[in-house]
Length: 342
Ligand SMILES: NC(=O)C1=CN([C@@H]2O[C@H](COP(=O)(O)OP(=O)(O)OC[C@H]3O[C@@H](n4cnc5c(N)ncnc54)[C@H](O)[C@@H]3O)[C@@H](O)[C@H]2O)C=CC1
Ligand SMILES: O=C(CO)COP(=O)(O)O
Image (cartoon, rainbow, N blue to C red; front, side, top):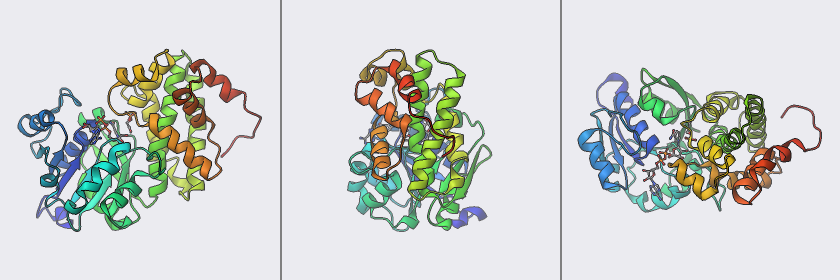
């Protein structure tokens, strides 16, 4: 794969998942010089990607690079791949990957693009990927940052973080996806990068709910800032590096997700704040809003290490336990006095 730098051969990459981010990341890899095959469940979507280089269901109006093709045959998609990126809803990752374990190419690197925590096990996605595919940690990387799919599909510039316990793996993935509009930074803090990606979705739900209630920028800034504090608190308790949280995967992604109307988590929160039921909000939002399910697993993870996460806890109460949305702010503001800081 290092041959790519010399231009001797294009990296063969596979993306599992033909939704918004899987398709966009496939385009990023292709623009960086890879030959890319997307696997998806929908024959119509795969055919449209392969024949017309479009995915109108998830990326309307976007022309995909010619080097992106697609198939519904996961084993065929995996054959010969050197890099396999995974972009399916977090709660479906294990069940999707386990049957493909024997088809995973020897020596290939797995890259989790997912931002969630598995219910029932409270595992981060890189852990799920490693367990499901039987891979050592050194062959697994995660990509996470302020990476709203539609903007990147339009080739708007952004940066991201590629994290792996192996510097060689992180560099290899970074090299495979770096382009004129997509700049990867590497680090070895897989725990911190993944927790940032999963918990910012929960914080974006809280911001959305408050905006749906008609609350303004002071409230938004308060929730984002205190949200980062609780992400940091959880991460540090689980062994993450403090430098990760103010970085792209932390503050960067939190800002993008909490501010953008393109964010499904933010949008779903707005719908809830405006009075929809959870089922109505999921329907109205469309796409995968990971924070809905991961709010529970994140809170469980926090409880298991004795970390207080008041915003996450309030989101769980609103989303899953029937707390009226107009009680969210008072629930957070009525907490006992404490000094500012982590
Ligand atoms: N959309 C975005 O801007 C970004 C998304 N992500 C993350 O990427 C992951 C995937 O998100 P998106 O592609 O945006 O979601 P999406 O909702 O656009 O697409 C999900 C894809 O997974 C497929 N899928 C659904 N259930 C499945 C199952 N049981 N088994 C196999 N495939 C299934 C769907 O058919 C669809 O192709 C999530 O963890 C998300 O947090 C990360 C960065 C950016
Ligand atoms: O992770 C994302 C941006 O970095 C996408 O956010 P949503 O899943 O809320 O759309």
